[in-house]
Image (cartoon, rainbow, N blue to C red; front, top):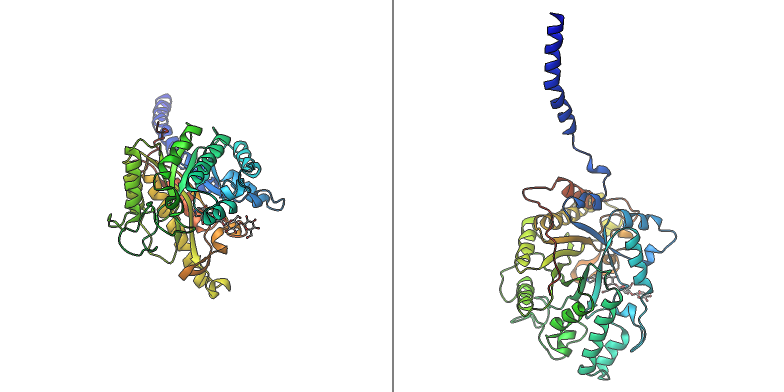
Length: 409
Ligand code: G3I
């Protein structure tokens, strides 16, 4: 009798125990201790930050280095790969010292590097702007100078750059002058100065295709991106819709066989505007992906107005801003996660201690700030926690691993 009871007890235990231990293993791991880069890995997504090289090398800023290396698995040079930082004199040598330090930092921390930026109207060397203005640099010479620049920089970093921002911000905004009609270019226009049409004015719109071809010839492996702001969501898809313009431009470039592999959406947002839902973000990214290109969020930050009350530390004014910022970081990240060709999500500086919007007066917005995911003392903000929660809770069927992009030949 006893032995029969024992047998029954054994059978019951054998049936029950696996399910008990299975239910124990159903306790999910706690994402609270995980970094952004660890949580993003499951999706094949890279999470990045722009890096301020002064902060990175400041002996007093060990926390900056620690977070830059542990939280992110891709980095972008905030300023040191820009032309003005690389070539101070006309026909002078290139100084890659600072940029190479970032490459080294990335290698040590197993991070991919986004190259920023080859062709932009801003932060070009003083000699170049002056020479174009006073006519001492002719159009023919300017084209040769640009070709040499693209090839020199891309060759220097050959094999070390994952994604290059080849052309940045070449398209005007609807509120730019002229205010109506066909606002968007690149097309040659008279009298343009230091703005989006600088290169088109002097070289004609073909410079974009040329720049991609020059870049490809210097590094066949790097993914080549067009990068711009205000690309989050399509508007009415008409002639005043900047996103539609960039879409058409990308389509035409691809149709001509130009080696453009990706479109980068910068993602500079502000909490005072209506902004977008995650689904609008996903739809826009998917529409670009339909052209065969990869996408990426390349410079995300969500600033707020610094009113006198914010400056005085009034939490009633600060809290809604922190929440608004977190919501927008989330919308962009969730949209990116839902679009399988969205390869990386980079924030433009991870701490309010070093964040460009702090020094920037945005026209009607006035003084801004509070834009990063860590505060000035490196405390994680709501935005950081929202990003972690988004990465931790996302999965099939709506979020699937990334689809890698091959460089277009
Ligand atoms: O290099 C000079 C230095 O010699 C001088 O002592 C110092 C004094 O102010 O200024 C330094 O230049 C600053 C430069 O950053 C390098 O630190 C400029 O004043 C400053 O205006 C410049 O700002 C950068 C801005 O691009 C220029 O347009 C920001 O740091 C950088 O975050 C920002 O990044 C751009 C992306 O490249 C493209 N998309 C938009 C994004 C935000 O504007």
